[in-house]
Image (cartoon, rainbow, N blue to C red):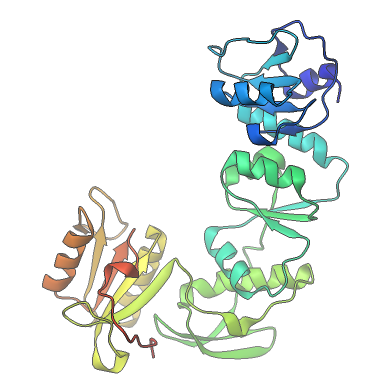
Length: 326
């Protein structure tokens, strides 16, 4: 690519008098720079490494960066991230690639049920890693969860069908029997308010002819119920009426508590969160400073279901034998 084309693409200003007129490739990692490449960074040490490796051009946005080699094309831009993704959009012109924006729940189910992921790449949320992934991939489909980054690549990025809804035959908070594509799946380990996420993913897989296996369905990392006793040891469900439910998002806490409110008025629930965390529908969550304080709250509080936000089941005592939920 010619330097003048690079300037037009990035809307940048050249602040040196380079002897080079074109670049070969581009990267955001100094260790990957080869002679003739463009390097994108605001880190002075990384830029020095890239120059030592033979970079012909530098794209940067930090005005305090010092020009150390005037023969190299130094291109200053307003926003280094946006400039990088303008280059990605240019690269994608010659590719027939589709981009899909998934929610975290949808992505969890996609990873869970798809049996063959060839020709599909899941994009990280870090913009540099995403940049390199797209640049060096031969995939025809890219899936990401960061809405801002995905829209930098495709302003009209595809999303899954929000109208896709699964038929639930029967359910508890912890197990659901549902019907998808005329087949009934009995008492799967999935909370009922996650089933529509699963249906969207199934519809997506059918549309793109991706092989999948719904027998793989189980709890996602977003909602993990564990039966416990008064000492927090994992119990056989038939011997305990206490459940610690670990979540990584507050929306699931709200949905689960609403489910309980309408379906099990006898159930006593508590919510544990880090300090100052606000939870819809909860006037006084139990705030914990650390894992030890969270353990003490669970040991001393009366509850049937404890929703624990921002911790995982590793906070429970380690035991030799664990039990399935039912």
